[in-house]
Length: 298
Ligand code: A2P
Image (tube, rainbow, N blue to C red):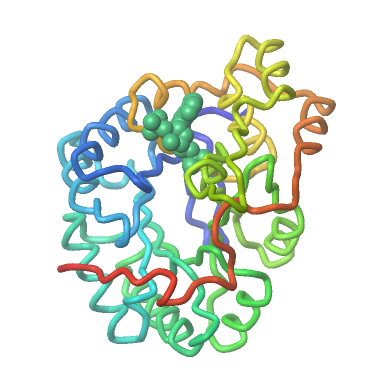
């Protein structure tokens, strides 16, 4: 039975909490309080990235909770401006220092850089070294296509443990999930609540508010739950890891309160039917430095 402590077993035996807490777009000011609220609520995975510019605050919050290190799972990601073998070792040390930790549970390459895939491969090789040295417990990727995974794996030794991708009922990634299954990769959903369809909306892509969808509202009503809880339960029942983000303690609690009900097969099918085939954010082919020109400060 799913519960707040449910884990997914990665391809190297490491257990990763299925429910995690994300801090993308969380300001440094809000990060300490929201991570502390999440840990107090019972979340045991915190997902950050060097490019989120809040690793220091994530580390501070974890230290303040005084939770035992082995009771919390920390993910961070290497940004594309840090790619290259030596650059990755440097970037990793910087993340570790900011987080104030001695190891990272899961280290992800944040985006493939198709125009310079050789550097992406060099970074992954450096991540393999960090894994061999015990400085990370698992390594993986984010926003990779199946083809990127295969190109990477052809030149490296360790299959990524995780691919973190945009995944919500409007873009449910059934094909990628099958590709992951075939390779023993765990699927982790970013923007599980579909808010990327709001914050990345523009003239060409008008905002689509997943949580206002009538199908979700009626299923929510039937269970005495909120549309957000229905969506998160939909992920978890399919073995998809999630990292919902909120800066509000009531929502942080709401998003973890998804273990006292079950979606029927019919309800799951109704939610599956919301698929639009349109992603809300950038895709695997769009990771290049011109598009994402961030520099990570020491
Ligand atoms: P806020 O931080 O103000 O709570 P996603 O993970 O899909 O990108 O969604 C994150 C967005 O959804 C954030 O803008 C967050 O806003 C909002 N959010 C998080 N949890 C909930 C919830 N339970 N109900 C409604 N909105 C939520």
